[in-house]
Length: 335
Image 1: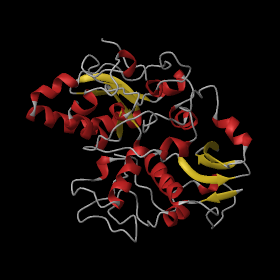
Image 2 (image 1 turned 30 degrees about the horizontal axis):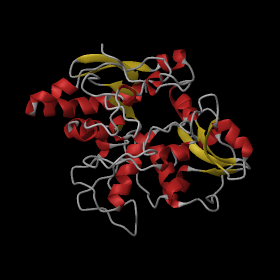
Image 3 (image 1 turned 60 degrees about the vertical axis):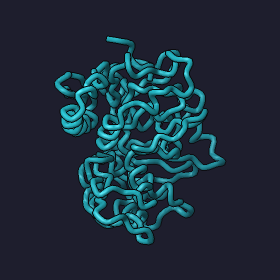
């Protein structure tokens, strides 16, 4: 078994600063002037802070063949979820090690059936319940990008239910214990504690946006946060069950099962100011999925983190980008 420490991941990503600090992620591809590190949805991660005493023997080398995408994923996962304490490799695959000795499958080896059976639990339906690497594989397009969403294009809709259950809770009672009350433009709702903190950041931006464009308030009527339920017509749990999703103004923002339109005009027409504010706080938008859920915003800071770093690598970062950007009773959405 091979164990990666905090220092290994810093080395793996050519990064030796806390994730909330400014710095170049890619030594051979400098970030634009004024760009600040965009993956600070959780506390700053400093070298030597992982609970190594709980993790046994230490190794210096990274696994052979760990590719660039995996290194980027690991950086964003640790930046987003401080509970992730390391990475172990065994004969079945690569596993995230979470505080308390729990393991979550990051990626199985190609010839491993055991890891596959672990990942494909009762949640698995039509390829939507996947391992962590697969859940992060499809690049999420940040505002103002709204590319076409043909069949199969739904960045972030594939989820690792093992990761969600490990981070937020395995049942309604466990999730409920860490749910917090929060507000959006004065409207109360309950979300998991990290999502609640993130929504507070979005709320501040949206309050300014509504003052400038009053009509935006029509799109910001809260219609659901934490509720333990499954996706309509499926066995998979909804992200609402983990307290990481919020639905806004479903009468104006439809769900794909309610409409015959493919794509829906609101996938282009929905106000960018709202999507941008939510993305900057670490939420992805269901309007960027083929199976669109235009009312739906879901706290997935690791996906926003990865999107921002890839954007920076392409030289498209904004001088306004900063730590808060990532990984800072109508019908409710079926997701």
